[in-house]
Amino acid sequence: MNIIVVVFDSLRKDSVGTYGAPPWGPVHTPHLDAFAQESLVFTRAYPESLPTLPARRALYTGRRVYPFHNGDFRLKGDFVGAPGWGPIPEDIPTLAERLGEAGYRTGLVADVYHMFKPSKNFWRGFDQWMFLRGQETDPARSGPRLTPEEVDYWLPKEMQTEWKVRFIQQCIMNLHDRRREEDYFAPRVLQEAARWLEQNQDADRFFLTVESFDPHEPWLAPAHYRRMYSAREGQEQVASGYADTNTMADGLLERTQANYNGVVSMCDRWFGYFMDTLRVLGLLDNTMVIVTADHGHSIGDRSYIGKRGYPSAPEVYDIPLIVRYPGGQHGGTRNNAFVQFTDITATVLEAAGAPVPAELDGTSFLETGPAGGAGPRDHATIGWGTAPTVITDKWWFNCKVDGTGVLLYDLAADEPFARNVAREHSEVVDALFAQAREDAGGGFPEWLLRLAEDQADAPGCSDLAARA
Image 1 (cartoon, rainbow, N blue to C red):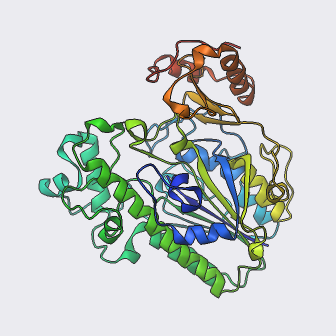
Image 2: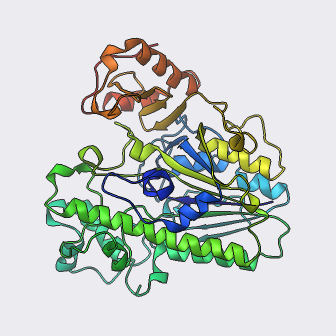
């Protein structure tokens, strides 16, 4: 069979209608919802490590990135990002390389500029790869510069810092000359992905990865998408403050949520275009399509806007995972087993009839997913910087790698994240921290432990130390 993997960056699980709605109201995603009706829908899917690049490294290799051994990257051409923010190690084969060896034609269409910065190699193994320029601070244009008045329109004065002004300058500068919806990022990515399908109809079997940086901030889309959710005009707000939303001026949070919703709906519309191309080309009966996201984004949840690994939260860590089997087989099936990115890699290899190497850290759900049941995992461990998160049926655990700053939430409570219960369940804390260490291979790198010492404890955490 042919295989397609579509990754939307920062797509909240609850912003896809089949999963429900975010706290501020439903998002219109008719094409993704229709896709879900023909698909196997996982309800407890998680990345393996975060954010952007570590997540994709796990997906592209099927190997754990957490706990970021040899992950203190300081490479020319990029900022010093989160632990693990680097290239794919040269000695680890990529999924595209493995599928190429199995006789697949491989393609990558992406606008995730972090993947293509100097020193990065996420296109390794693809027969064709296309990088669409201009997202975020990609230096795609050097002018004309924004006037002070234009900066004030796009970025509220109370949010303006030297770095954020530079950020919005480059973001908007990159959008100069874009007049039609088709010129925006997600439409361009999905149009080019559809064109790749048209140009590669002679392939016996193909593997296509489609990477859309939308709906990642800045939340830029034609105004008609924002007006689907808010008719209020005035001050624009397209960036994330990474701060307490109680400090935002009246109306700005609502504007932010409307802009995010709008970009999600734009992604949905052009995903529908992409799927219709599959239909027109007669590929729906012999192609598996996997749709997921690397993470979500807090937009007012618990009075915060941004994304972070500590304290971790479901609006960032819970991700959509929707798998359409050829011909829509197993459509309408839902599965609540724990699934992580490395499992997607193993599944793709099995679906391709390629060997699934023993060194992979994932387990295929090709056969077990539609059958339901608990699956092979009884928990998920996700690494982000100095703070692992362990999620079980009962608990959500988050602390620093040195065992301090513990957060424990009871998922059976009416409002699970309203109260940290670590002090009342020290034995649970010890067990889950031991699990985090075990999944880290028995311990954490020294440089990460030193980094944790300088990190402030999360608000509301317990000083209880887990040293199991």
